[in-house]
Image (cartoon, rainbow, N blue to C red):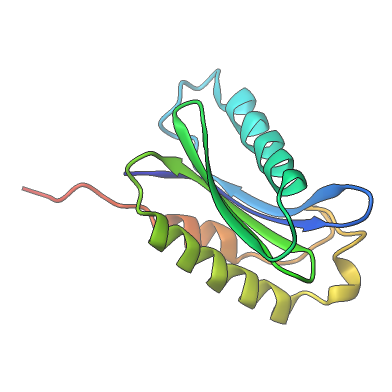
Length: 137
């Protein structure tokens, strides 16, 4: 069970844009990592774009399962993991991240924000914390 991506996006009018993201592509071949990360960013934006405000969904994309939560205020979160990762845990993580993000980052910054301009450093920590490590023997 593994998580690969955790993203916070804003579903504005007319388009969706990435506010902040964290990736764990360490299990991929070194030369594949940039394209895998780009695929995850693109897929996250596409899923949020196709989701209604106030909705939650799980979408299978290739060998990944993408969990999306779009709040009524346009703030959205996407977790990309493998097929074995529990759906309930993913949505709990998205609730927690979006609540914390909305408290720390002003709503005024969401429509024009980008990963370079938004200061929110917790995503990497959450991605590490929610990884399921194999049990030691």
